[in-house]
Length: 259
Image (tube, rainbow, N blue to C red):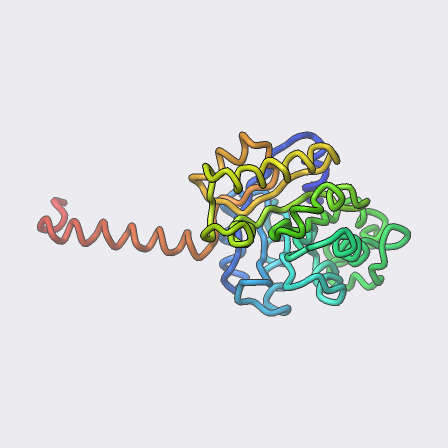
């Protein structure tokens, strides 16, 4: 059985992952076989529907990577469905208040800690009938901090029972702070926001998570983040194909191969 991210975070491990924006099980499996600790299926801004996300989870399950899903919204219906499909972590966007975080926890966990409905049809095929007994301990509940409202309430959100990590959305958070979307390290207001989220998580003894890339990820590790994305499928595809094309065009310009 795949080790949960929660247990690894409790041991102060840093987990590195990749972000799946493109629909399709083959691409998800290819990412997962790259050696990442987790693969996130992005149903908020990605291009997949539920059936495709289910197939992608099954493909990730062929590897040692942990399947994570960012749901489109803080809605118990879709949260329950992707958990029943086998997701072992849920990233919930646009959390604004403590009440939002509490609703997310309730949707992710079975009673008595939440209100998730029982019906793990697909995931019980993977994990057996014991899934129910271990689900609450294995499923990571990860609200996103990406608005001024969430930043103002971040200490209270971090201390909501059942929250396992705070996920910094640098693009939306930057926009909310009056900055261009992206990583704005070096801008005082952005650095202060990162520090505030990190301190809130540390004080609450939970993890911090972030969307990142290979250039910024080392800094995020230094800042104490434990769930860090290294690339996205679409960015990796664009970079690799562009590099290959440039290599061949350069060789063509220089008269072809010397072989």
